[in-house]
Amino acid sequence: MQEQQARGLINGPAKSKKRTLLVAAFNSDAENPESAAYGTYDVLAGKKLVDTWTTLKPKASFKKSVTYGVNDDLRLAPYSVNPERLDLVLFGAGFTPKTISRFISPVESAQPLGPP
Image (cartoon, rainbow, N blue to C red; front, side):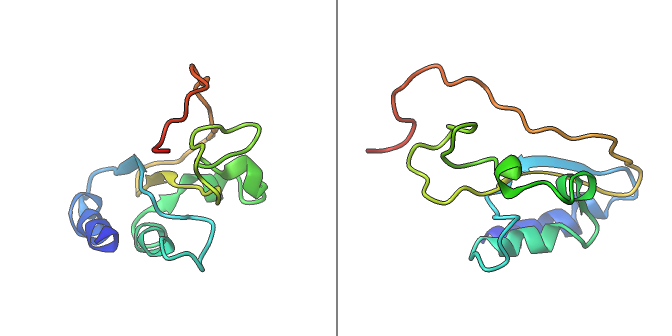
């Protein structure tokens, strides 16, 4: 289903002659081609859209690139066992990205965010 939605983006909005920038939580594991969730990333990045993170930070460590998971810096998903880079910034023709940063909102509560 996710791959079909990604194809819809590629064949719809990303097909436009106008500048295209997609920013979303795509829930596609961008760092792991072995993951079942990689297919969506494969459809989106490299066709008409380019992954800003890998373009500007090709040598960034995995720990510095994850946007979902549990570690000292990123406490967004208490129940995640496998950190992943799910949130993506993808650009098409007409954009020249200069910088990209990962930022984290402070955790306001020690209560779990997910189901027990």
